[in-house]
Length: 472
Image 1 (cartoon, rainbow, N blue to C red):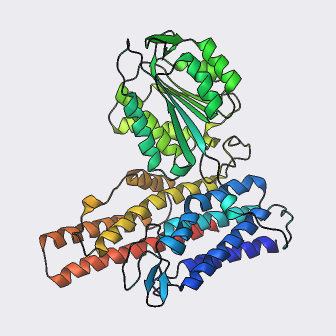
Image 2 (cartoon, rainbow, N blue to C red):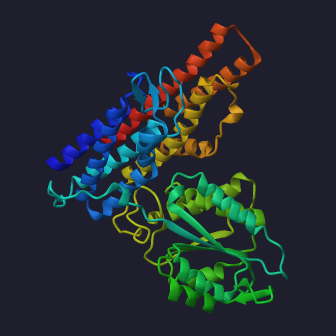
């Protein structure tokens, strides 16, 4: 339809304007042009939301809330660098070489590409009625719903001490460095007593309930009584709790020994429940939980997150990967339960029967992997451009890179992204070593620096080329 074609074409115009400085063709955009660009994007965004079917709006909004909004705010207020009579919209200007926190590729290009794919999908459906005199949805009012995790901890005084605080720290840290960290809210309750469960469920209405503590061989979880001692809670009581107060709950994690018995009962009323079929060591429980939430924070399904939790144990050499079990309610598919991410319509409707096409899932996985690679590559470029300190690979966090490389490799795609990235990393290491050790002439060191910058540009080109192929 013409309306969709016009909106799709407008997205390409917005993309071209935002990319000018990064392409090195201009020093920057004037302040007036930056304001015009922001206003044009917001008008386009409002029109898109007015036309899109309800089940596609959440994924479209998500790109704005998580990424594009920050890009535009930084361009308008925080990071406008005056260069003569113009202002830079990008990471570097030819004169100032100043680094910008929200690079174009990660914070505008990728999200816009995702939004365009949503418009292409909507093009196959009847368009929603919209009149030019209607007021488009207010951009500032389009907040994405958050997923709430309720972390319940109990370690009675007469039981073996567990590192529950360390588990909480590991979970929150992994969420903090994930892509959709702003959409996951973790609340906790400590030294939990049975009566506290009713209060916590009523107060927070969680989507994920996570219990961390002790369990026993007869299938009870161990809470705390009024004196701080152990208070077992049986299967019947726990099932009744979730039957009465399940509300938004989609996932329950019983990170306690011998908790599969409880999980088998709860699965009758909750879609996905994770329990332990045996005793589990403290460190294994911590690693599994942290990796599970890390995957959720990147928009992975519950099945993917569970599998990554088990892989994390294998990678650490902890031989307990078969202890966690994922139980699923009849009719539910954990591979389609995506609590956060580009594709889920809302926190309580991610079990939609529509699901995702394999092509769209592949594109989303590659988007996430490419973003990780690009973030690290940005840091290589930044370190190379610095003049106030010695370039050093130690300054660059490689968190998530191995997972991203594995993802791209598993997708078996015909792209030069990985070879170029490895060449970029090698070129930077060579440059940093020779620069710090004064190996070679100044001219030779500058050639190494130029190689790093050239490989960075090659990497961006290869990513964009492949993503355009996936878009078609």
